[in-house]
Image (cartoon, rainbow, N blue to C red):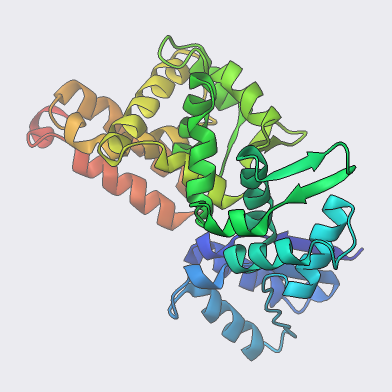
Length: 324
């Protein structure tokens, strides 16, 4: 039976991921029924990224490849989209769509956020008497509304409740996605008791989505970036460390092993604090050793090397005598 595999955001893939993809696609015995689609952001990769090596190796292996460059909407298509969204003829909303194109370069997600910003500022309104959306392009051009989508998102997030902001900050520390069970673990603590309520708010506000398996994901990487920017740079390392410690204390008590990589990666951000306490050093050394061994069991040698290296760096100077 034919199989289609789609992998998004391949700019974050490491060499191990790339090797697995190449092995599958270059397998002449079993890959004839495989259709693979991979996407990456060309502005987030350097010329030496592994993804370009993958493309070259696939071509050498005679695997047929097709490259598609997906750009933003052009002015005509954007005008069509705005026309459909506002239920107006394209010629009527062309002035607005031209402004949006100048601000967003046709990126659909940025267009949506910018239009929501216009509406929240009262610059895009529905007129009951005219029974249509109205705006004044001169005022919109004159208004000091930034075209930086990160600023738009951050401004929106700053108006959210404390629980929702905390949830977004926590999820941003974990990356682009995490499991709902992790939020459940955190909600058992006094410090993060409100994240469960925050989750409901973040879902209803459309910042994150949840699938059937309980995986939580930001709707766009710019949303995650904006949420992470809510944390002052001076506090980021401490927040990562605190999250790791809280999860470690809860999951260790429940004998849960499914979050070990997440916990270890968060705790390792606080290496300076760990080294001041020998008891913590030994406990988190064992945690990293366990994570490294689990990575080895999964044949992920690069990840294993990272965790085992962290374990070695956390050992006290007298470990040969007292913690052999």
